[in-house]
Amino acid sequence: MIIVKLKCQMCGERFEAKLLDRDNPQERHVPGSPVRCPRCGSTRVETIERVRRAS
Image 1: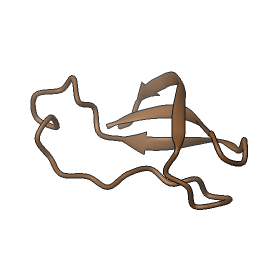
Image 2 (image 1 turned 45 degrees about the horizontal axis):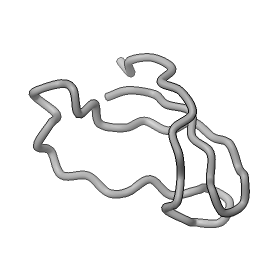
Image 3 (image 1 turned 135 degrees about the horizontal axis):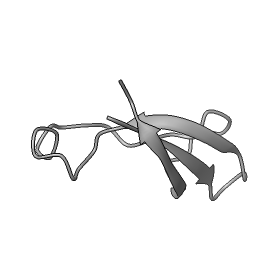
Image 4 (image 1 turned 135 degrees about the vertical axis):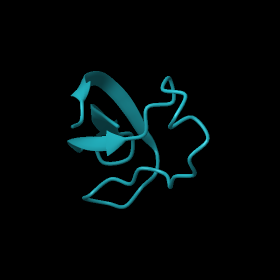
């Protein structure tokens, strides 16, 4: 898992989320759900930066 900073393309909200690390072979094929904006619920989000690995 990794922590990333994201920005919603619909409302402009900036937030952090814990995502699967697709570069990690153990997490590559694990099914997941799309990230949603906490304010408006949109799935149109863009990654701003990768912060760190989650423990």
